[in-house]
Amino acid sequence: MLRETEEELVRAAQAGNITAFERLVRGMEQQMLAVAAGFAHCPDDANDIYQDAMLAAYRALPNFKLESKFSTWLYKIVVNTSLSNRRKLKRAWQKMTALQNEVGQGEQYCENTDTPEARILDGELNTQINQALAKLTDTERIAFVLCHQQGFKIREAAEVMSCSGNSVKVLLFRARNKLKVFWRNITS
Amino acid sequence: MNIPEDKEQLQHLVIRYLYGDLNDAEKSQFTEELGQNDALQKMLEQEQYFESALPIGAQPSIDAERMQGNRWLLRQRLQQENRGRFSLRQWLQSLFERPLTLAFQTAGMAATFVLGLMIATPSPGPVDQSGVSTLASVQQSQETSPLALINDEDYEIFELQVASYDAASGDIDLSFSLASETHISGNIADEEIHGLMAVALTNDIDSAARMETIDVLQPVVSGDRVYEALIYVLTNDQNPGVRYQAVQSLVELAHEDSVREALRYALSEDVNPGVRLEAFQALVNYPDEATLAVFRQQMDVDSNEYIRAQARSIVEETDNRTIEL
Image (tube, rainbow over all chains, first blue to last red; front, side):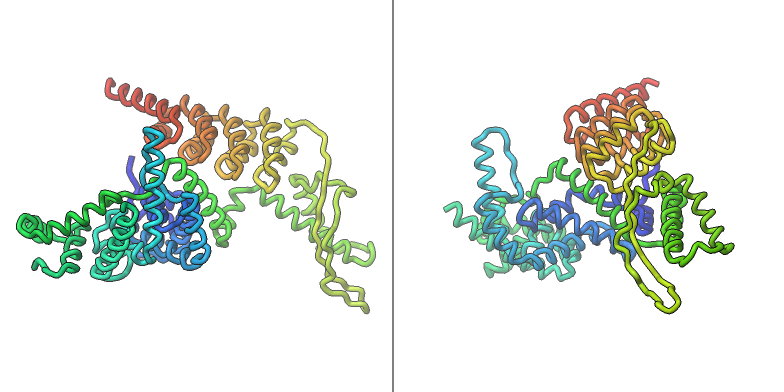
């Protein structure tokens, strides 16, 4: 069976074909949701960001030029949607972070279900990771999520963030230092 | 590449190394330098210690159920978005694709217009030629419209507004809304009745009523309007219980291409495992190429263990048979 090319799918989706749009994002949805989850304070927020970003992408698709990579363009939209959601809801997010720390309803980074003890330890680790990430500024977090969690090279992250590779490097440097301090405090 | 002595610059270099920013030559120089430069070695160890807690590539885990939930919700939102976009071409196309809806809408609009005309007419004098033709066309449309089933005493007029009134001539301009409740007795085999119920399924009736309607329509499920409405419900309804009932009704029509297409969609996209399971079981007897492609996908990603195992077994069996041939 012939596979539709990305270009064909983009053109069909630009004309309002929902199935074509779904096929376009199908291979990337897990990463996109993980990016949203990297920014959000809880899974529900991450889902909202993902939904808003995908809808924004669908609306903006007629303006998408086939000169750039669709995945880079989509990452940009997810990152921008995450940022605008954070700015819009800054106060609510701050409150939520505090609450989050108490109840530990954040994203799960490790899921060891072998034994109840392992589950508890992983639950604590997840809470600590979420708390640590909450210490980063928006741009530090973008750089960290893209390079550290998503495995982007510095220049790829720079393209998504529309800045220089040097800026990304500085942001990563700051993010890692903040996280290290937080980590040291916890472990000591 | 110069290896810096400044601690901060050294850390920048390590970060570039860790995040793949060094080219091959720089990378081999970096590795060589590691054996000789204690400061660089120590810096790398410090950075790697941090990664023992949060390694590169560690990202929030997204399970299949959550992914499918998002997929489903996104489809609903995209469909809503498309409905909101007005395009004359698409509108006309969709009208021709749904002749029944077109007939109902036309009849509804025409009936409202005629009723308005009757109220606005001061006396029952002779009707002019244009009035007669309008009335005639409405009566013709009403034969296929639910409005034909509404008795005179079964409707209420509300939100009546006088847009303008000329006291001297008596000319008046009105607008109003019409609500009606009608009782119909008949047989479910009557096309007019089950057609009406099928249309109601795609309109905004409450979930309990939709479930009851699907239940009642079961004996006439093979009627064109009925199964089209059930396909619509299976692929669009927000309520999993209603979708479940729709898929159960459609099982016996799995030999139809359009039904199988809807079942495949439900199997790959529906967030509810019960709906997926019913769709899967209906498709098992029709393992065509498109269905096998969905089975192939679901045997890896479906959150339901039974579907994964059965889909794998069917796919493997088919593959083995192909090899033998």
